[in-house]
Image (cartoon, rainbow, N blue to C red):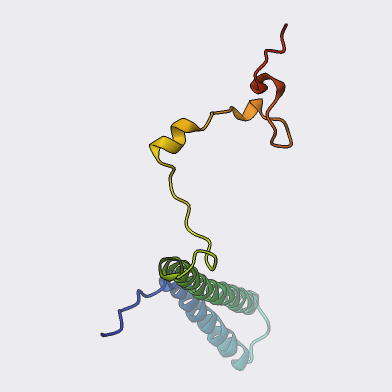
Length: 146
């Protein structure tokens, strides 16, 4: 039998990668502009300050967005692994319960009680029970209001 095609886990990043690349392009532009201004040999002007500020800011923005993208990617991979692990655990528990030779090896899945079992039990309100799970005096047969 062929291996089933596993669904691709959610991989965030198309939009995030766009902004990282956009910040990188702007940073590269500002760094080139600053390099051109420095190599022309003019005195420091407002253009130098603007180019340096733009280069530093866009570089930091690109780094922060890149780190965020990497963290989102690793979190998505961990989440997909965790979901796969939970499915494996639940499937193995289900298969073990169905294949158990004796009932002592595996805790059986809870089943709904039949109509006979439901009608034969006395129904007791949660408020009528004492803290230790015992019935209060009102349920033991006598009316305490006398």
